[in-house]
Image 1 (cartoon, one colour):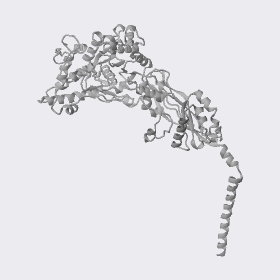
Image 2: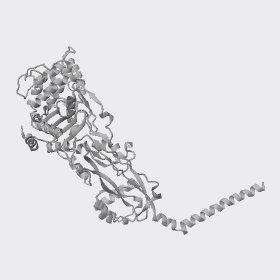
Image 3: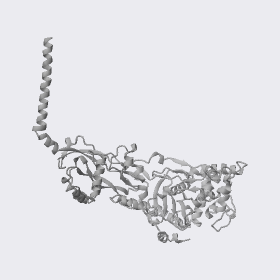
Image 4: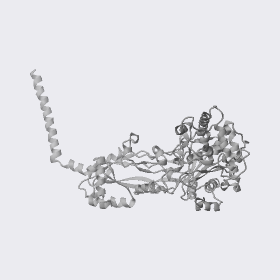
Length: 608
């Protein structure tokens, strides 16, 4: 027992001795030996985020649409800021003193120990000037990254833009992994394909001294990770055709959308007025954005997919004819008198003897009677119920053309448009309180209808394909040798049998050969264009001009919709623009220079 008791004292002594040794060593390190303190003050490890190169975007021919340009951000780590001379800092970065103080306050509020942007998008000259003076501002350092640049001035509405991630987005779990100061797609392709374009950040660990001077890599880069560049995108856009479409619009308000019928690839996407995408790349981004946002002509409004409240006008007669043929209420040889007691007809012509002539002359009374035959088929003895049944059946078929629904283009904020329904009229008039005479304006593409220019172009792709469409899309390939997303490789069929398209297409060919679409004719070049003019009523002012077409008639290569606001008849403005665009795409040249000059003059806006 005595042995065990002595052993207990020995163990206690050992522990006491070890404790004394550690205490003496700590006293020596912390009080006597200043080498560790000097080393800590001399060197520190700094994590430098390596921002990846954002994916590039090309047109269908390999022309660069969106590139990366070098920019520099001045970063700050609040805890490392010592004896800051804010007045001198404000002079260095050329910002007001109060602005400098506010930026520092914002950085501290975000994190005292984590870096955050203090002043972004420095030019190369600004970077060089500030870098030379940073040794006097501990806690500040330069971070190099890339910003978007555009070697052209086209396609702004489709490309979209990137901007700094917002605090609201940072609080959203959807954006987990992003940090303050990161840039993210805000609209267009940049937003829709953000997950492919963004890439993955890397990090490098550097040893720096108390003056902020780099002393080399930490542990020879063992813990560094490389940034992974984003995927490049190959778009469906033909940049030359796109630029020509913007040139022809010449500042007029409206849209031009061209599609390759067989694939659904968007060849041109013009929203006019348009703007130079480079306006959103520099330090003046915020100022430029607000100026465009408040512009009276709604320059920022993405018309091809968002202008959904305007009626389609006479182009809708083509769909009326197809549904009537499918329903069996008319044949290609059906004739109707041009009875203007039913509805006014703005075209002077004899009574259409068949469907082709009716389409060529765009006879309003003819399509009034076609629509009535479609809606009132006697499915109920009650006239009101019969109309409601007929309209419901008609609506079911018209939506197979992509009207009244989102087509699913790979751009954000697409609108579905408006297609009248029994439910809509029941809310307006009450059940069993409306009939055909209430809704007849639908027969000529007016009334409770609204379609987007994209839907109009897609309608022409359906006509070109004789009954189906592939969802329109602006990206052909993710990666150099990739494919479009699966949803852009599927055919969507209408409710109309293919055999019914021939008489309607023949009528469209007659419109261009000798009807209201003659200004789009390319007969002298041996190209058969099939089209239809339209005039969309506008309660707020002058009517809008519409022209839709595809070409050639056989084995079509392009479908197009032109919508010019406040331009009156489609034959005067929209048809010439469409004809010139088709010629440009199919022949890579323009031979009709007088027609081009007429369009560029915008004199069509002066015609009453």
